[in-house]
Length: 84
Length: 198
Image (tube, rainbow over all chains, first blue to last red; front, side):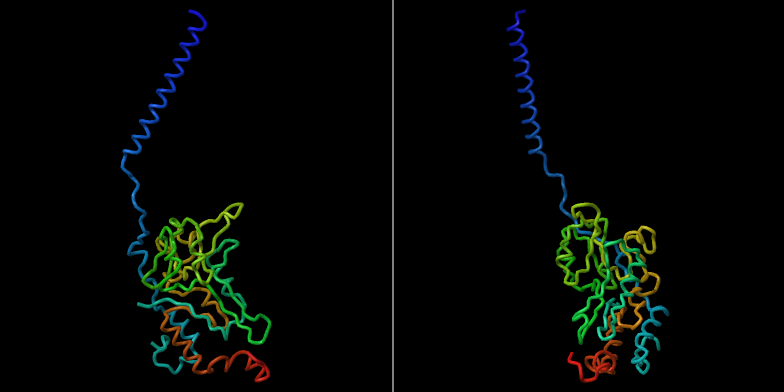
């Protein structure tokens, strides 16, 4: 085989390679475009009932806080928590 | 259902910063973050006022309104909490908050931010109550223990009130009724009589 024929064969091989590569890329792009969007819509954080439940309780500790904060003014008040 | 609120009696606050220190210690808040701070107006002048500020747990919270990932939620106690697992540290809530409550840890160079951190009203976060995961992310959960926020319980002058909004409003109202409007019993006019202009 002559040297120029060998070069031609190599050149054709390279062209075939790029042609195949280009065709594959186009096919992949078409495939991506044709695929429906699989991502879902953004979802708001939905805390459960257990997370949003009320934790405040009128314990003796809390009653003492109310009483000591309002002892000057609430001592005569009938609706003071400390008197309950 | 009780609605949890903070109320700072500015006539009593002496800017001792005990509330700030108590908060940082109770929740092991990292460097660079203050969930609570004391703001002083007219510092060093007659009529000076100090107010202890933190998240006010708004009824219609602007931080929640602008959050792009909706990481905020309001509990039955009207406490505004957020999930650090969902927060992306964008900083929108910082710009929306009128009180400057949201804080961000610096996690790297060039100003990169971490997850937002703010006052939880000592009621933890979305993790199970009193769990280690909750403590590491949000600090202690005193409300679940039957207590109130430590900042208010620590206040030596009883300036910072916390608890059921109706109850602390009643306490404050009766204080004002007794001492009069302004500073009838405590404050500048008591110390300096009429020689000082407030």
